Image (tube, rainbow, N blue to C red):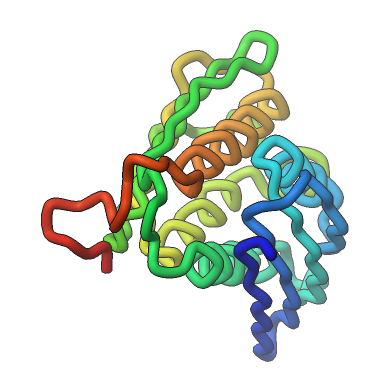
Length: 196
């Protein structure tokens, strides 16, 4: 059985149910109410070879802020739970991913200490029906909820859709590497002896 986590979060602003399997095949069953966000999460799932079932009912009559941010919190929590004690995993992962004219670097450290670095401003307010500023908030929430050091750097940008897609796919590839096992690692990969 693969490393899995099921997380629910219910507030006055959102109701979220998420099931994540880190050792999946790229199966996605996602409904957030925000079509472009669904598309990005589908790419994350498929390119990371995760399985993700997600249902989000948010206050979209207000805007998409709570839906996107709270989904990041829940996904980050699920990643933390699914990865477990971190014994035998590589801990670090990185990817440089092209999407046509855009090139994005993502680096991950599952250190247990959250840190988030971001260097990009989208040129439009919306990408499809997603507020572009919420992409940063999503990754920030994932980083802090999971205890992950996460860096996303746009090496060359252009079309906003392409940049966003390269971000989600590079994150998927980096996370897939970080959670993968290395037979040479018999405990946790840390000089301290723990990853908290």
